[in-house]
Image (tube, rainbow, N blue to C red; front, top):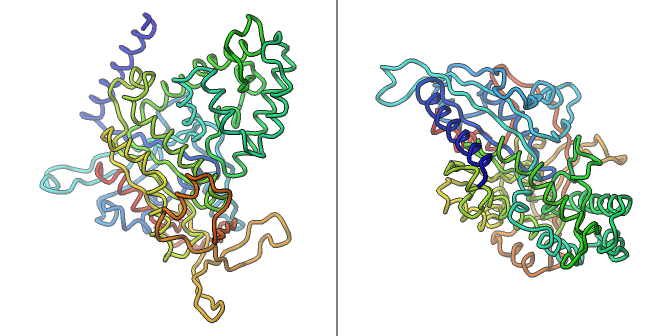
Length: 475
């Protein structure tokens, strides 16, 4: 390790010590990381969580709220001056207005501080007054977290992994054809590099839209102000061995290393290393609808994500975190309101099986983990219909389709999830192209018009239990 790395490590240890002392003697802080892959509902989760902590009428599962020990909750300026503020008020207005709509997804890191004034319980309740706990919610894209897997591989290793993964995917046909026509040992021409990078980025966007989860590098999907820069102008190519200097593939390898050093590493150093509790949101229903390959890809992505919470397996994180570990991790299958409550236990069971490998890694690292099915904002109601002379459990909601059905009320039955998760995960592991004898549908619902009583936050499913697991022990 160089002098710069040593100095950075010493400074980070000093920061950790001062943070710990400050929390012990003054006002404690919990930094809650919220991440998820595409369409998992991070923005809605954070907005509804904050709204329901401010107005706690729908939070009986949060013991401090049901016991009346939370005397007040209020928003405060966030502590990090260089991080954009999570636009809570704008997102809440979108969800609760007269014509509600889903808010725009956040495309970069953002933060919000919610402070809770809490009375103690137990033996000390009569001797201590209320104390203030700060909850710093850090929202960041799950695609950025997947980039951690790049830190311990070379360009050649990454290229081989990607080329093998996309070999049979229709979404990658255009990129594969372009790569086959390209001589990687030819002298670098920037126009060729740009065509390859753009084609690969197009594949990643299409793959994500079609339900695939392992779509790295993450900044290719969310480039922000890096769009068009050399650090995002590379793509996987075979044949890096023996490549001459100034060749296309040598430059691709150099830019890959620059991406790791200049884009990935600063995120983990400045933000991820400070997380105390973590929520990983998963659109499991969307993956099931897309088919076995999407489910297997999601399982692999969850295992990769959990590598970030086990620094002992990653030299980069071991040096960065200096022994600090995330204390609790919640894996939440979102959009549970798309199913009748009778199927929620099955969705939770599938979620637990889907991330079994990932959970085992986190538990080995000492983190408490839990999986559950939630809906951050309930957009449907439940009903029973008769089909073929038999009762059928359905949900009703307002359609969000872009065709002539948009805005119409509809009853929806997505298909019956199996009691045994292996009926889904085994075909996925075996490479099946479609589900045998089953058809799982998905419907997009608009948020329902709300008529909230004073003291009530937006309706949800198990958001109170999620909050109890994540922060209940500190209240």
